[in-house]
Image 1 (cartoon, rainbow, N blue to C red):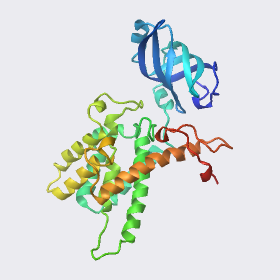
Image 2: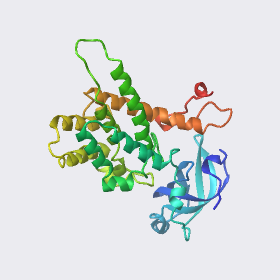
Image 3: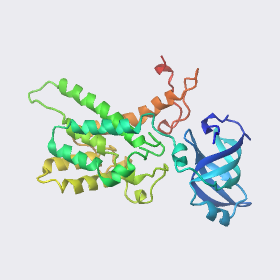
Length: 328
């Protein structure tokens, strides 16, 4: 079924909508004039929050609450310079193809097979046999294999699309590989030779967000269990479970890897139980923070209309980004 993408709909009031859309966060609310439905609706190009259908009922909510795709008829509204949708009707479509949900999801600009192949190749370059074995065990875990390709790296902040987590991991691997080599090839002058442990950094890049496949769903929502235990403690728990299965796993490496995952948010206020205290943990935190902000800007540049220099509002910046300086 051909339908105009949401991002191509003009920012104007009363534009007609007749679309199959992903539906999330459906809730029954009560207003001054009775019950209404509030929900988010999206396709692969965009997602609109605070959509509404007035004159609803508990019965209608009960019928629709488990549906992930609905046929929506209505019109647009504009509030605070954002497009919204006011639905006249929400219908459960019949005989949907199995891959329709995927076709309505935003997805990575990279091929998923390419991302998986490249991440595996970086693991094979690891020199420490314990870290390499642990990385292989983590990436081939049944649950991880089943979910990793589908989930985002974030729901709003960055890489918020199918394959977003794989994209984020791959991007950081490339950057970390070059950065560690640059640091090690340009040592700080002093009496004691020093070297950043690349295997520890690369393990942290691969694993720091891995259990977002536990925290999020392929429908770009929080998993219920993810609200109880997010990816930081889950990552620390799971790597220690795997390390227990590797004979004579060094305790020093166990300590550093566990610290790496627990500290990667950088601050207690940002969700880390402790702050980075090793060179490798500091590198991981700042690379993660840097590219969670830069990559959304680069993706916005890819979508920038001809002649424009400002992006649409980016959640990670709390506003639009000026991209004129990047244009060539």
